[in-house]
Amino acid sequence: MAKPKQKEFRTPRGTHDILPEEQPLWEKIQKEVKETSAFYGFERIDTPHIEQTELFTLGTGETTDIVTKQMYSFRTRGGDQLSLRPEGTPSVMRAYFEHGMWNLPQPVKLYYFGSFFRHEAPQRGRFREFRQWGLELIGEEGAVAEAEVVRVLYTFLDELGLKGVVFEVNSIGCATCRPHYRSALSNYYRSRVKGLCKDCKERFRQNPLRLLDCKEEKCLVIRQGAPQTFDHLCEHCKSHFRVFLEFLDEVGLPYSLNPFLVRGLDYYTRTVFEVFANEEVKTEPVKEEIPIEGDPVANGDDKSGSEGKTTQVPQGGGEVRRLALGGGGRYDNLAELIGGRQIPAAGAAIGIERVILAWKTGRLKLPEPQRPKVFLAQLGDLAKKKSFGLVEILRKANISVAESFGRDSIKSQLKIADKTGVEFALILGQKEALDGTAILREMSSGNQETVPQEKLVETLKKRLKR
Ligand code: AMP
Figure 1 (cartoon, rainbow, N blue to C red):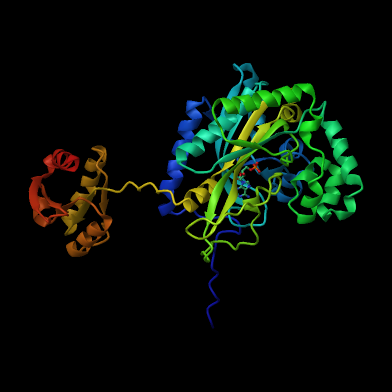
Figure 2 (cartoon, protein in one colour; figure 1 turned 180 degrees about the vertical axis):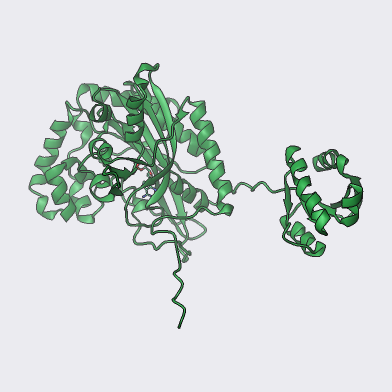
């Protein structure tokens, strides 16, 4: 009987492996995340990948795209209704209440780094599992809070060497002035509903502010004449926004005003912002892990109100597009929604896969992976055993060592040593294993010397320093 065809397993759609050769870049980014967060006084928090679904329906908002279309939700065997976390802010706010952090000196400054899950159409830079670094500054009502969050993101991107980073900023007002703006928007759109896309017809009914998020060409045309938030802010919101911009000016941070930026989440109040980088995209076909079906990423996130892609032709051929790296804002309403108390807060999240994309397309120099400087080669059973122990002695002395215990021929082991690019090979044969020595071979010259095993660490340390 014919053998059944073996199933070929692949990563689920919209997810990806991070292979060993990519790890140095991920490690560099995580190191930068850690150092920048710590410098500005943000402490790390890790929350579960699963939460009660209600945390997001209440916190993120029942009518948001995330909740209505993108959450992975399920009922457990025990009957709990849970979701894979689609974003980090509600979880951090939940933890703030659960652990009584309002008793701590305010503001409480927290950061997180990890995977988030959204059932989206995978595209270049858009995944179903992606990683974010997020910052939350809870318990500060002054505009300095969001200015600080923006500053931390900028420092991080600048330290990484990303070029052309720019922030788009806006204020969407508060409970006092937003209703006026909302009704101005409704009045403007009422006579134009027919010309809107299907989703926007629904948005008009549910939350007209979200009409400004749409990227459909016909909706963008209508948006051009829409009322702008600035003209409807109350005095408090106006002065809050002015102070926020003054802080950015103080440190010379590059930003531009985008009156249509609203972001798609219910909990934002007053300040909202997004950050973009220039991404140089080659025009010749590039091998992609996942198919490109259009490219809304370059136009900002689908819930951002960012303008369409800017295209310039760089000298090397190709196209420069704007890549949405992250966003955030003030969210004074979230605490009350999920914790029952009014606590002012601001925060932001950066998409790490996007940062990596910007890094790669910017052709920045990749960090060199740490490679061992010594290779341990052995010949014969006794030498193999002795070498096995020798690895521990070298590890304790902090000398990284590569080996190939599965191979028996010295020639093939030295070939690997050569490929690994080590400076020295240590060779143990039957004779050396018996008399407690090892042959130290300098790979570049081929010079060899015999060294007693108890002197190996000392000798290697001296030689590796040169
Ligand atoms: P958000 O949490 O939606 O405000 O998104 C903040 C940032 O996370 C975005 O600007 C992106 O850089 C990144 N991001 C959001 N959704 C995705 C996704 N599906 N795939 C990759 N990155 C994402």
